[in-house]
Amino acid sequence: MMEPEMREKAKNAMRLILEAARFDVEEVDEPLDLSAVREGVCLLVLCSNEKAMISQFDKTNYSLMIDDHEMNCKKLLSRSIRISQPRTASVGCRGVCPIYRRSGPRGYPEP
Image (cartoon, rainbow, N blue to C red; front, top):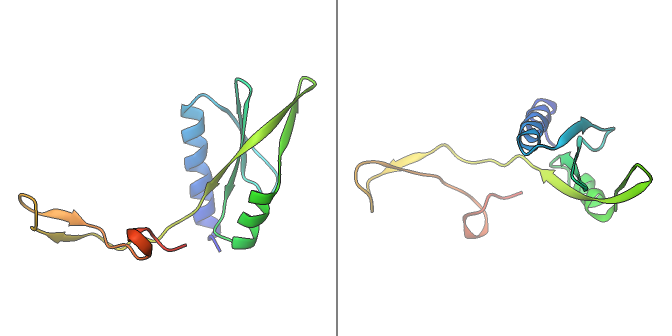
C-alpha cells in the first residue's frame, strides 16, 4: 500500500508534469487522483501500489463529457518503487561511477 504522504507527493509530481505539458489538471474523487484535459485528450491518474486498485483501474473504461462531446480517457499509473542506495565502483569508467542495485528480473525493481 502506498503511504498517504508518498501518494500526495506522487500526485503533486504528476500535477506539475501535466501542467508543464499544458494540461488543465483537476483533483478527482478517490480512488482516482487527477484528471487532465488538453486539446481533446483526457488523462486519468491513479497513484497507488495496491494490486486490487490497479487491477480495477486497468479494467475500467473511463470517459468524460465536455460540451456534449464524449471523450475516452487514457490512464496513467504512478507507483512508488524501491531503489537501493547507490554504491561506487571504478570498473569500466574513469573515476568513481554510481551503481544502482535493483532487484527483480533484468534489473527492474520488484512491484
